[in-house]
Image (cartoon, rainbow, N blue to C red):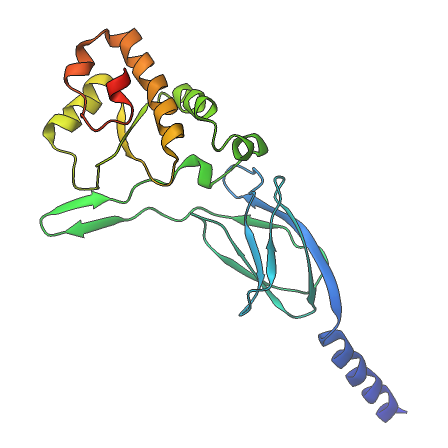
Length: 213
């Protein structure tokens, strides 16, 4: 009888180990409690997985005792062994570090807020310059996209201009030219209204759309 019980337990364990289940849950920001859209949920050592929806939710078919890897830009990765059908995860922000170059140091740039909590409205308006300008303006952030800027191009005059007029020069990145012109036009309008015409003689000449201003 004992032998039969032992074999039954062993057989059940083998079946359980490879049992296919659906795991679901929420991924949130540990600091704010906000849902994290676009977080990756992968089965460990594979590329099989899914990303969370706008509400930070996910649902993934896997097997018991697999390990799930949860990650998001700017967050510390977490690994969790699958032992139940609902797994909720809170991801914490990575600590910012200082990178030292010779006698001087340069702090690591802060990641954009958009890389933490992205709303459905933000994604829908990703290519809408007016929407993005207004959102940045609410946080007192004003950008000027320039065509020739690299990370080493800002000189003393540029930095003084940024400080004087409360703006930041920005790389054009992967934005389309039409987007850049429309966004800069809104920034130019802000500068004209607040500082009249003095900024025109001090701005970088490679600011996108400047000639039409």
